[in-house]
Amino acid sequence: MNQPQGKTDSGVVIGALIGTAVLVAIGALLLVDSTGRGGSGLSDAYELDAVKMARFDPNLIACHEVEPAIATGFARSRALTLDGEGRLYIAGDKAVHVLSAEGTLERVIAVSGEPRCVAVSSEGRIYVGLRNRVEVFDAAGERLAAWEPLGDRSFLSSILVAGDSVFVADAGNAVVQRYDKTGKAINRIGEKDPTRDIPGFLVPSPYFDLALAPDGLLRVVSPGRTRVEAYTFDGDLEFAWGENSIRIHGFCGCCNPVNIAMLPDGRYVTAEKGLIRVKIYDADGTFQSVVAGPDQLVEGGAARVFENAEDAEASGFDVAVDAAGRIFVLDTIENKVRVFVENQKGRSE
Image (cartoon, rainbow, N blue to C red; front, top):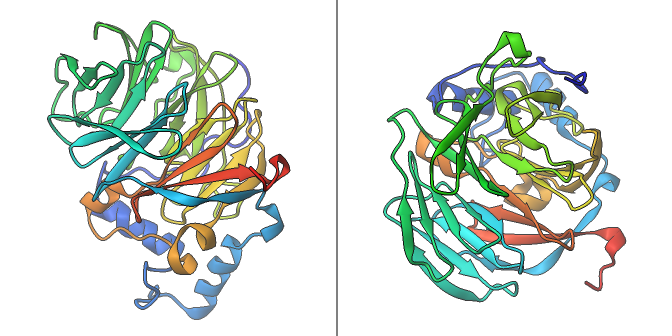
């Protein structure tokens, strides 16, 4: 196993999966509410110090937004992915909306419950994760299979199709399950195992994301450790990176980042909840730039404080990347997809 990069166990906070205490703690850490009217309950000096720490040089913003944003058509959107043709697959309410690369709705795929995550294979099969089970659809939206439900504790939060394997992140059990494409379980990834130097994932909130990097390794967020871990398909931990910090180079709060995506050149795009910000890290996990910060993503630039568990389950922004390196941000507050392009690619795009 390679040596981990960056800080590994700093700032770990363990809480219940969707515990109200965690949600309150997020608000206390960020010291602001969603409207700015309630105040933090702490001294002005303490609050101003935290706000100052969260500020960053606007010159670090290296992307611009391409207008207009794309409406999801949902009252509550949850997850986003793209296929090889640039189509958008957005999970929300009790359906998946398939949109063209230009944002035109092509079809609606009804599912039997509230979808939490979605992935598309190279053959065009659509894998939808409900709370504790996976449903599989063909490109036309016809259901092909419903996999065996998992236990009541399961909370599926991410799906990734890679070759002949389907990886499912279960936030409720803090483990990644690897299946074949028929739904047969192959192995579990990330369970605590001191003999293999695997500490186990910490998942205090219902966000637990996966991505496949160009080097062929899985990238899995361990949000309670505020880091990203790299695994082989057989479950060997190769390295990890990440640091808990409210400052722009780190991940703030009890459990961030909530979602990640990989740029074609191996860099990471990360999204954080609470203090909502989307950033780019290089292939080694070193902070590089900001896609958009709270001032660009949230009206008034305020932190997003969740008022209840249901709100917390649905309010983390998702991110995806296309082959051209465009960054798609699922704004779950406004229920729209916002598209960002790195400045060096030119504002004429």
